[in-house]
Amino acid sequence: MTRARKFGLAALALLILMALLAGGAARRESVTIDEVAHVGAGVSYLQKLDLRLNEEHPPLAKVMAALPLVLLGAQADYSHVSWTFSNNIFNQYLGEWVFGDWFLMRWNDPYSTIRWARTPMLLTTLLLGLVIYVYGSRLGNPWGGLLSLCAFVTTPAFLAFGPLVLNDIVVTLFWLLAVWQLPNMWRSPAHATVIKFGLALAGAFLTKFSSGLLFFVFIAYVLSLRCKRVPEQPFEKIELRRWRRRAWRNLAKGTLWAALFVYLVYFVLSWNQPTDSFGLIPHFPASPVLRRLLMPVWLYLRGLVLFALSAGSRPTFIFGHAYPHGVWFYFPGLFLLKSQLTFLLLLLLVAAATLLAKRRSPAQSLIPSGMQPQWRAIWVSLVVFVAACMLNRLDISIRHFSIALALIVLLLAPLPRALELLREANPQTARLASWLTVALALVSVVTAIRAYPNYLPYLNSLSLGRPGYHLVNDSNLDWNHALPQVETFVHQRGLSQILLDQYGWSEPGRYIPEAQLWDCQRPGVSDGGQWAAVSANYIEESANCIWLLQYPHEALADGSMYAVLLPQVIPLPGSPGGPPLPTDYRYLAGMQLGDLDVRSVFLNCIRDPQQLQPTMDQMMAIMAESRKKK
Image 1 (tube, one colour):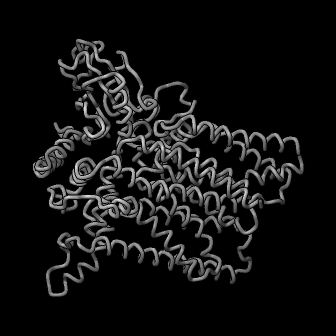
Image 2 (cartoon, one colour):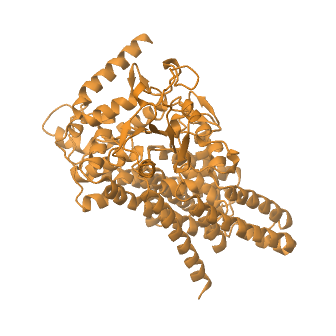
Image 3 (cartoon, rainbow, N blue to C red):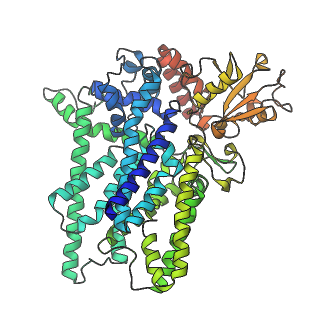
């Protein structure tokens, strides 16, 4: 068996392990919050060629997830009020959740539907792993590629979010492809290479609006070449000027190709969407054709505006403290808490080995010849992305850090080459570091297996034994994925009813028939003596229900939820052992519109879709009154 074949089989084994761990975990989870909107919207794009739902995110990931559902004949009622109501830019914000919930929970079987929708996402995650292995092998050697892949397949964030119907892993794949192709724009590439760059760029733009950060990466990469040259950079001024101009032309061509691909996708998927919203063009004989041709541009720009409005700022929570908006240390803190310690130690090891190897052999490069531009592109894009995350005022989840995680994984690729160079000068140190590298990689695999299937709430030992609800928030802890574990608890205890305060607003009945929706901040007198299942996010951050943990309780899904046995007589609000006073209430994502509880608003509309329009009218009136007061 050839050496290349051995490495290929090892990489295949790691990818199979990831498929078993991530796929197995996803099969045990209920539909998460964002999947409710994404799955239904994606199916409607393909079945109706209408992009009215979930405009705040581009369609590619949703279409990928919807493809097997459409091929298998998934049912959707397009005469339903949730569809007809969502015919304008603001209504769809409310309507997409109702349509998605009915699609998953009533018109189809939620178990098989979400399983098929997650299959393309899992395959995309495995493809990302394959790309990391290939790129890691080129940036280092086959051992470097295998080490990078091992780190990827054992990263809890990728295991947790990889199979879910989200944009984050898909955009990570296309970001990596685009960044890798970027240096080729300086190399007199063939026309096909420019088109490949355009396709990768289009894939990113069609997945997430925040991928516009790639333009800042391009600028930063150009500036980096002026500050520090790469080996293939010309010395002679005239040739250097031509080299730079060629790159700018190719970047422009690639961007135009990307714009064309994005336009065509939007054009096809909006073919049946009414053009009434495009009221800038008055009616005349040719206006229907002109509106249809301009509709893709209009929809993309409108979605970009919606994304900017929704992603501007939001309260956040980390390390036991609430903040009115994002803080710079949010993602660095999450990275340290939610990465395996072995991965963090590998990063320290690669830094130390690189410094030692450079000191011992300063003339030797750790990056193979011809790969320095790609290595520069990886570093530059990582710096740009991390800087954007730290400056951002919307801090929600480690999944939004997926691009940085993938780029950081690739930083491990040069470690085996660094150890080879170190072996020439200090064999004993190099041998010890090599065995340490192997040991850390093996422990990473063992830890990933031991953590199965609870990857979403994973925290390493840097948490110092403190519970997750005191350290992190949102989908770093619970994303309404643990309802099957609650149902298991109900059967184990032989309960005929359980009070449920879930992190979301979907109907839980398909997962927990015995559930009675409940609010842990507003318990009733008749609730005494019953079991209640409460999202861990409601203990401190999104609600003020720490009072529950004074009573007998049990962690579910590794602390994503808590089952609590309420006292026979619940103390009065504000008294010792009792729920909080209304003045001390906290709310999901800090959202509160007047006297309306946002979760109740969505749930009421899901239960009775005829309430969509009255609810929207009430919300608009509250917002108008709020603007007047300002």
